[in-house]
Length: 308
Ligand code: CP
Image (cartoon, rainbow, N blue to C red; front, side, top):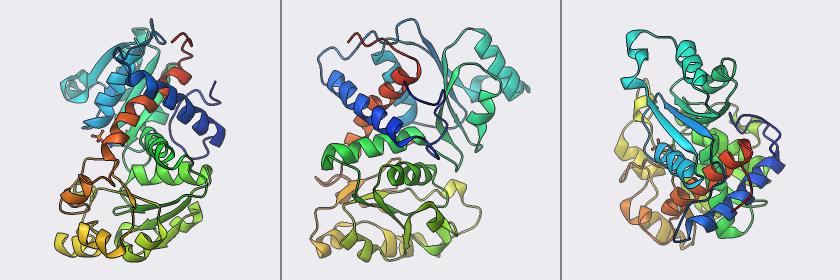
């Protein structure tokens, strides 16, 4: 039903297929509101979750999505695998596939690792985040959450705020949002915005107050200390003053901006607790929509039966 066999990223991904995933996700959202939140769509399918990097939301969300669709699920953790004994990535992948699996959901610290995996296995591969490259399922759930609030994506003014350089969420959102006709601005310190990012069809701002005036929604990104080689801003305090989303700043503009964050959050740095827990924040809706979006992606890629 989707044009591509794998979901590796949203760069060049057909807009119509993103819309199909979001529409299907809304149907599954309805399943999640039922007393019995399970459908037989992927009965008999086996999916391996191959996580080489830490995760809370994405991993649990994929596992839940698989269970809600009645698929069989196997979890792999790099820290407890034979990779620790020197086995290569290729051998690990081929051994897992020899066990007759249908799909692999993969998170890896290296950009391109899921693409590399497709060269060694026949199974469907879904990228659950590869280094600083892409996190397509996060962007899809973000777009679904915007559509839930605004009823559309086209024409929305969406600002991605914070550490753009180290963010796979930012890149996948840029590809997805621009494909669906949203206007995108990236906002952060110059040291955290890649040069020439305008070539991707976005505007750049270093003035958060101006972005507040322009935007319908802010997607606030985590400062990724673990991916920074050297200090790229003078101090956390200065970052918070210039780019932190806090109630004083929101009150000053008196605007009902929608607040999003993919998590995990650094409360008190890029976002204040009062904002994260406010009525304007749809952060936990994003988490719920994540399960529905991943159900839709698995269902569409694995050719599930429409018998719910
Ligand atoms: N948003 C996200 O990818 O969170 P995790 O790293 O916890 O999976």
